[in-house]
Amino acid sequence: MLRYLPFLLIIALTIYAFIDCLNTPEEEVKHLPKPVWVLIILLFSIVGPVVWLAAGKQRSAVAGGRARRTQWVAPDDNPEFLRSLGEEQRRTRDADAEKDRNEDAGKDAGKDPDKD
Image 1 (cartoon, one colour):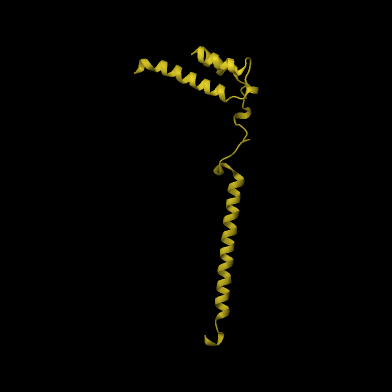
Image 2 (cartoon, one colour):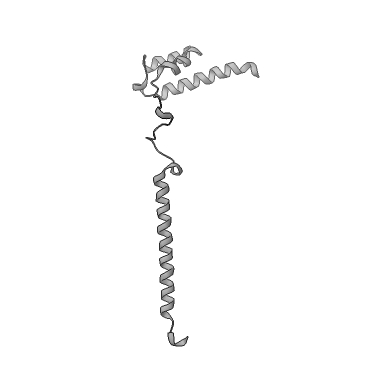
């Protein structure tokens, strides 16, 4: 089984580079047109994918070690969403408390003070 590992790694690298090349927008491809990069990746099984990954695409360096969020953020990572949940819980709790107070006041108002 171990003798097949290098071939599997080469195939995996080629497939990864091929899909990466196809998904890369045309304006981010460097040095050659996109169809030429696809041919290079497919024809030169080891060198093609490595060259694509090294020089074929514009890579943006992340400054400060953390990328800025410009895309969709999951709700449990979104502080605005979490804050809105807290506010909604407070409003619900306050409305329930107000309803309970009104019901208690209605019960007290319905009692006859002379019967006590």
